[in-house]
Image (cartoon, rainbow, N blue to C red; front, side, top):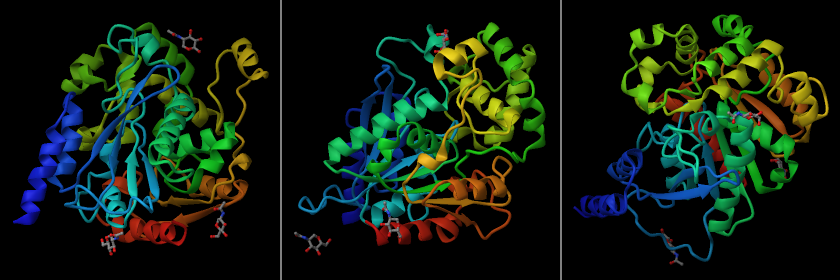
Length: 384
Ligand SMILES: *[C@@H]1O[C@H](CO)[C@@H](O)[C@H](O)[C@H]1NC(C)=O
Ligand SMILES: *[C@@H]1O[C@H](CO)[C@@H](O)[C@H](O)[C@H]1NC(C)=O
Ligand SMILES: *[C@@H]1O[C@H](CO)[C@@H](O)[C@H](O)[C@H]1NC(C)=O
């Protein structure tokens, strides 16, 4: 009875002040799961408005008593075409965000530009200024979105450090941020990367390897056709093959997306991304390395001081990192994980024991609790 009442109260909190459709979804969803949650807006220095979600209390609580000892903060960053929904999808007693909240953490979940409720900008309209709005790669997500969100969380919680968890591109962003702006290392107490994609020397997927050869050509053809956003609101309404068959570039792109996020299986989980993110990954797959976005040689020289794009220097990362990986990952090879772990001073690699576990299982498989999350909770507990 009391729990039902608390749930109703949480629902009222959740419904209060809702605007966007998706914000409704995520806060309603946490409320139905019995958790109070908050939405915060973070504005990046280049004007993107990001929606960040917070679950500060345990289940069926709307207040907790430790103002003297603020809870340790964990920040969860999603993967390509994902969102904060990734971390609550498995529901109470299974989803990482909820398990962390139960263990007494102040849980924050980011949303990259272009994605869930973050398809907003202080002056660019994503529909009418799409070319400019979607002109970003994961390096922008790392240096602007993740950086601003971390600074925002530390300010609001008045803490000096947080724990970081990143799935897939959420791991990529971690590598990029901490290698290009090493001062961020001091803001992160520890990190758990779930299939964090970086080195690509042994990139496993054959289809993507083949397509990656044409990355720059495909990217420029797509730009000419005005394709800059991947699975935006217009596309998501009608994942209609006929439409896309009209544009060979787009139908090829759909193949790529399907391999990466299995859209047909996980449509409700998917939020928009930019084509430039795909182009950047494509360049890396092709170059078999992990480097900054490559423009033409002149532009590279102006930006980076070298004719080709420089590699990210992972040896600059000093945070204690556990890199969780699985052998059934078509986007990240074990050898690349181990070689990153040997370059990053305080990194260790940990293999998931179920061999059929795949890239998206890190946030979608119910047995992630036993295979992965319990371990993370234990490690975090040693160094709250
Ligand atoms: C806070 O709540 C816990 C139980 O959840 C209790 O053990 C503790 O004494 C409380 N602390 C204060 C300062 O009231
Ligand atoms: C996208 O960004 C690149 C690099 O900053 C710039 O050269 C290009 O002109 C931009 N394109 C658009 C349409 O804003
Ligand atoms: C990293 O972990 C080790 C062993 O758990 C610990 O001794 C060390 O203080 C940690 N370093 C940082 C920077 O947290």
